[in-house]
Length: 89
Image 1 (cartoon, helix red, strand yellow):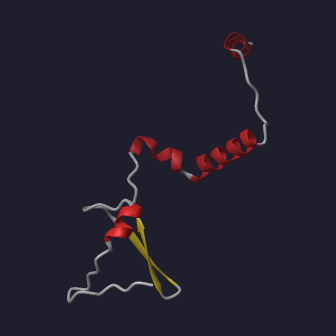
Image 2: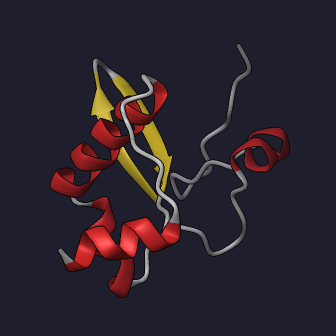
Image 3: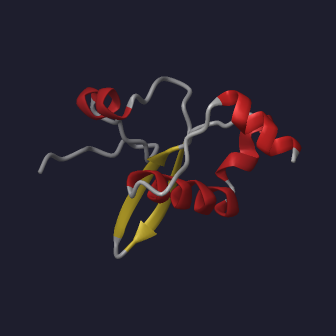
């Protein structure tokens, strides 16, 4: 385990090797929380407002279900003409 030093202003520097692995750049924001006597830092990923719906718990649950169905072979394939006809019926 490596150690960090706290400056007189209470600041720490995140080592380069960690910044590279987590792709943390100057100006990026992190969240923090205290967890069982530890400080946990997590990079914040910005999501465009127009795409925020995709990350709601409801949509993520549907995505997980769809992925599970696909992995288990529970899906249909269609020829485009038959598919369009089915949609119209």
